[in-house]
Length: 545
Image 1 (cartoon, rainbow, N blue to C red):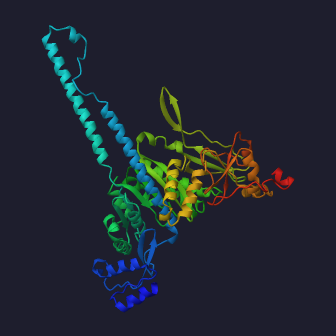
Image 2 (tube, rainbow, N blue to C red):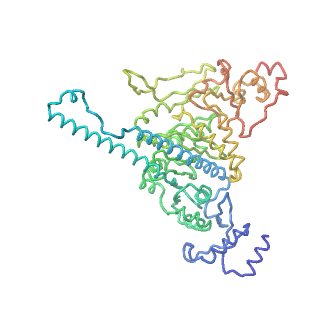
Image 3 (cartoon, rainbow, N blue to C red):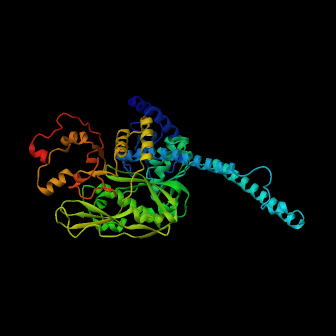
């Protein structure tokens, strides 16, 4: 088929410098239509010729990729884009539910307003005293005015409720760093409920490629996506509280965009943020991490989750400067980057609780046990809540397990990093529409792992690390799963090691805890089958361990 199409194109001698490869017949027909109107494209500087292009398809979008790779395109980021589309679909459905709930509440209040005849006299004495004409006239006028006020208030409630019901508009999306525009095009073509999508980039070549790709994808993408040559930071600062969704996916650290991104999101909007500088966030260069994110990282088995919590803490501190706070929806580590999805709300009172959600980390340099020190605390006095600095330190000078000293890192976000209800809705949506997600296997595995993990009671079993510290042989942890399951415990996989406020302090002594425990083993995203054959330890040495 490709040979026939190529032969047909050569025989027709279409006067064009465009050279397509690996394209379907439908794509070739669309491209031939575009060839007939090449004047509509911005071909860049005078004399510049585009000779070789390849059609790259991802989901329902297709882009023209130059052989010189002048515009950055990362094929492995399909996982990132699929996860973002799943989040957006869930966000739209949640916004509809919240709007319907808000409207029903206001309609219920409006229905409770008094209707009919004017209210009766205010006092009983006015009924008894009939001889005083001036007093009776005043009371009648007062009752009439109250009735009119109640009528106006009732009508205003109805008007506001009906107006809010009508004003549920399609979400407006901003992609701060668009490059080829593939992400924006996929949003436009695959999510029908979205409204306007603004794609920004400060590179002229990228904007030209973005506009060309938008037009190449037909009228649906052209009617929704707008490409602008602008600095994302300036654009976001000059459009405060305008976008329902802001997508930040820079090459490196997103720290320079956070302050302006926080200001351009509407109240209750969604911020999607990616960080690819994991070497910095995981402790490779602590000084650089502090200069970018305001936090010191620690090297440990939980380094990827600590990177997530450092990024969340950085976003929270930027939001607090504008009397806003964040609510994490999903935080994941995939491939070579981390990505967080948070909602932004405005409340000066809620900002006061931020120190309760941030903590410093004390990590032993010997046995790698860690403790968390909250930045703040609250106290209730005379029915009022007072905020104060947290008590500390929570650790002695030397570790009680091995006698070594502690390293201190942070501050990090120590509150939950996922919303399990959102994750369950996302997973159900992904499974119902799995044909529309090119990276279905990957994102469904990550979402399932996140949904099953219990971060409040999880215990990180760093078997190999502890074995290296005490110089002892530790068998494969999977061989001990059977006895633990039959003993009343639950074992589930996690995509990142645990580092939460309710995590156990001291991994070596976790057996001393009372009640059933959930042991989160550091495995990959794949779900491993747990059988009963061969679960028992083979030797007395293994049983002692």
